[in-house]
Length: 111
Ligand SMILES: [Zn+2]
Ligand SMILES: [Zn+2]
Image 1 (spheres, helix red, strand yellow):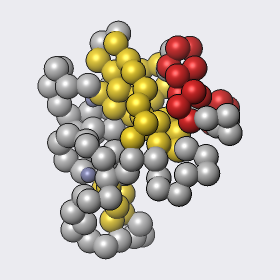
Image 2 (cartoon, helix red, strand yellow):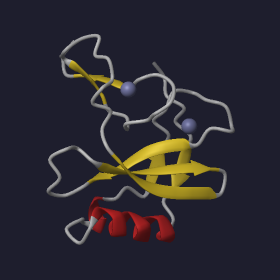
Image 3 (cartoon, protein in one colour):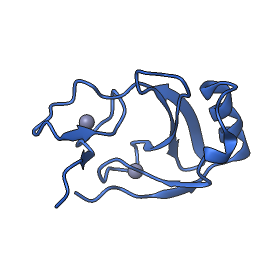
Image 4 (cartoon, protein in one colour):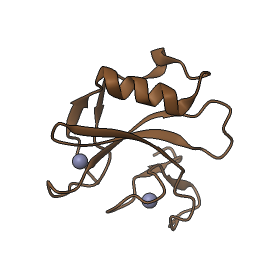
């Protein structure tokens, strides 16, 4: 499966919001400068989405995601998609809880 992969640069505002959401333990050095959309290819009305950073000390897998569309961008705290159907127990969907489109399977198997 190929992703949308539209790139964007993290703005200073988005970085500030991300660090606010992630809390004082978050390390700004861990934030990416550029991200690419991790969703399946989609139409232009749909926001792009990219994972930014996991919450430090959070055991539920919550993470800050960047959603953007053109020049509009927002950061949101999102849980993992635990209820995604797993076709194979060794595959996990790495997208957030209410993600649209197809799953982003990351197989842990070595081919
Ligand atoms: Zn996209
Ligand atoms: Zn999924």
